[in-house]
Amino acid sequence: MAPVRILVYSDDAHTREQVRLALGERPHPSMPTIDYVEVATAPIVVDKLDAGGIDLAILDGEASPAGGMGVAKQLKDEIVDCPPILVLTGRPDDAWLASWSRAEASAPQPIDPMELSSTVIALLRRQLSR
Figure (cartoon, rainbow, N blue to C red):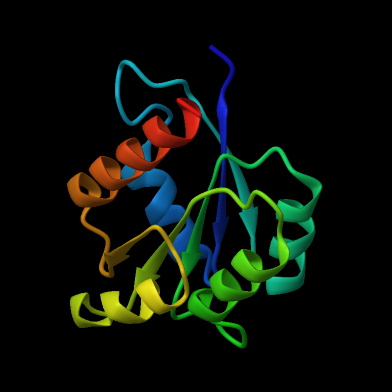
């Protein structure tokens, strides 16, 4: 099985590390391994997704100066066949904002590895079955 490519966007290296640690190399035995693409700026996120080859994007809703929710909305508006997006929210009550951004899913910070893994597994299964 070819690895899946997950883009992780945050201006905070610690947040990107927490995502990698929560998901590991393979979030489920039936899934392929993960090839992480770490990005710290919104323009590079757009470039990477526009180039293709990304299976899932995880965007930090608290990133600065461009938050993941605004970036998600821009991606959904501009990228044809945009991959699924998961937005990391500052708190569980912000899930409605992630929905506004057209993200397929959200997960609150601090990151709960079990919750993030189960959400990512579900998104990747849908994406890979297309």
